[in-house]
Image (cartoon, rainbow, N blue to C red; front, side):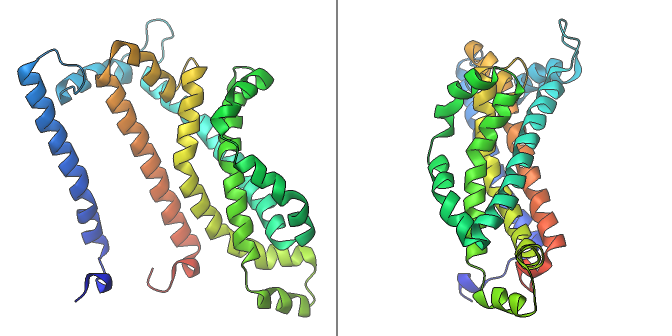
Length: 271
């Protein structure tokens, strides 16, 4: 059987997906052990014991100044900012994207503006956001929204514009108004695409969040990484990066699972 025709079951998919991760971990452990055998004080590739020791105080011991468990406080602050930014972007993509895709007058009026915003590097706007909104939470959330919302809007708009014209004609033939067309034809077909757009936007959203926290923040995962980098504290940086990757992967898995459960028809008969 040709490889292109092979179907991999769920259990085998999990096993195959774990292989590259295990290989990378083994390579890291071997290289780290080798470096520490040569230089026991090496900080670039810390051994697992050093990472556990460094993270123990952040995870389980309250900070002397604030009384907070810094690791969990950083996680909560970052997830709060990320969640708010993604929520606003998702709502904007759903509303604006459907209107741009379904209504030609709206598309003709605003598509150029959305495209113009989408091509501006969001990081370049960070100083403007800090000047306009200050150094608080608003600027950080706004960076996430500006960074991911235009792309999500364009994706939803393109998907709506590509709907078969026959569906639009049939709905109007049955007497559907513009709002009924949007709510009963466009909206149901936009939802699974919206979830996929959110999944694709998670990576950039994390980048914008970490960038904003690194520049102006006193708590957050990005703030902690950039705070300890001056001490070459890779025993803290690497666990934090791994934690961010785990949070992002878990969110992606949950979104994919939700899409398959709620919109089975959008994933084909075999799913």
